[in-house]
Structures are given as C-alpha cells and as structure tokens.
Length: 138
View 1: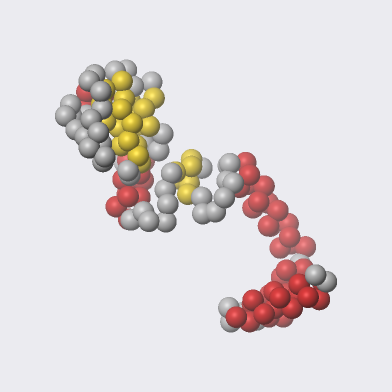
View 2: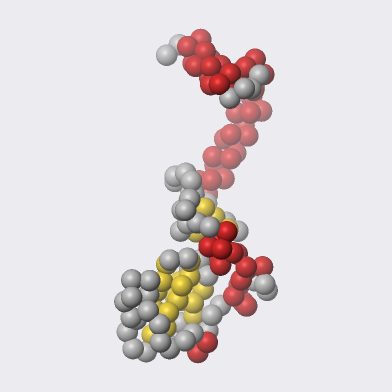
C-alpha cells in the first residue's frame, strides 16, 4: 500500500470511531507518538508479554482469561493487599486435609490442595507453601 492508501485506511477507521480524522492522522505521524509506542512495546517485551490480552498483577503474569469475574480477581489480588506476599502464603498445615480438585480428582495422600489462581490447582507436598499467582513452592 502507498502512504496515501494507509492514511486513507486509518482515516476511515478514525471516522468510524467518531474521532477527529485530521487530529488522529497527525498523531500517527508525530515523532512523540512513535517514541511512546516504542517505549510501551519495549516495556511489554521486558515483562514477557507475547500476546494480547495478557493479564498481570505487579508485573507478574496471571493465567487469567476474559471470562474471569470480579470474585476471581479478588481471589488473586486481596491476599496481596492484605499484608503483601509474606502474609498471602497458605501454609501446609492450614489447608484442609480432605478436598477434591474441580475435576473431582483427589490429590495424593500427604499433599495439600493449592488453588493459586481461580481454577488452577496444584497438590503441594510437605515443606511447600501455596503462593498466589505461582503455585506450590518451597
């Protein structure tokens, strides 16, 4: 495509979104806009963002998807707001002994359920803690 064809395409897009077409096209060719886009792209690369949408909390990737509800997000964020990571760990002895995963699959004996993200479950062994957004870790 020629430069004029590209500008026409973006102009039509801006018009369809009810934006000021001339102002929109001026922003596209503004060097400051280009620099901001490059900075944003480089920052995303340093965080491992390889697709959209990508969900992160405090620069940590969260295995969420667009079906998550407010309650799902609260399950991830609230422990972080209530004292930070050191208080958000679920210790081995605090997890109930009898439970089943969402698929009704029981974790092996001498392990504990760790729902580290909504719908994401691991079975922690003795000596491991359940860490939100991460899973079972020593």
